[in-house]
Length: 300
Ligand SMILES: [Zn+2]
Ligand SMILES: [Zn+2]
Image 1 (cartoon, rainbow, N blue to C red):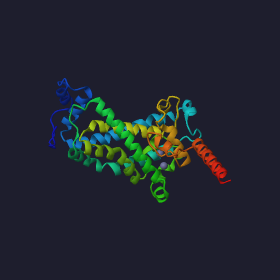
Image 2: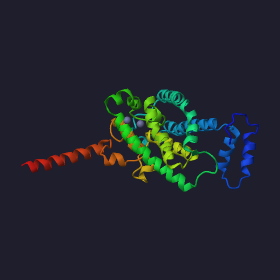
Image 3: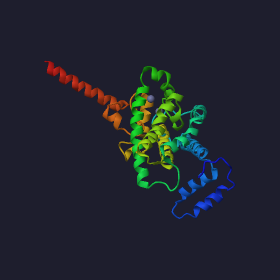
């Protein structure tokens, strides 16, 4: 892997054939190694990889939801069943998200590889052990969720809501594509939770591979798109992992414009009593009533 921007006369398949001779690499590692060797410019290879990964995973994950919106069978699983997005709405949203991706992301992405080199984010093969990858993914999920909870809650405060976060709330009944429909400042602030947290983690531990970051970005995009899908199925993940947020949690946020601020998990909203929706609202009211009655009795 070299940094010289000279063209590499080898084709990708020739590069792959060379890596294929290395028995200690799995197929993904061979493809990864051949890709970097073939591009022959690490800065460009990393920038292109992250940009394509983002576009492919975000839009790729949104397409099935757009199809599901057009299949009447799934209507019974729609959370806000009277509010199906029109073709026009979906098209407008897609154009806006795509423009923002090119405007906000296309420029800083080229600084990512130099940053990787500076703080020792590795990109060579082989990849780290599976246990390391899984542990780091779990850490990023937990930390991003905390970052998202507090920042999102802050964005609902007066002027921040009015000038920044209101854009994301244009759709009271979200659909997959709306996950990243937001003001550029919000994209940057919340995006820091996804990209900045692994960077800070690596700054202190010096132990992170770019492949893990790619996996993390993919899973975080799936989480965000699914949370905005507007569908709740009997097989949705939160039925098996009760602390997982999912669409059930985030749809309530869009519907009621308040509460349920976290991204991946339910614990912050549960512990700090900020869950959205009629059920938690009623529970809060009952608790307040009971408290007031106790106080009134004490005062007698
Ligand atoms: Zn919000
Ligand atoms: Zn949202």
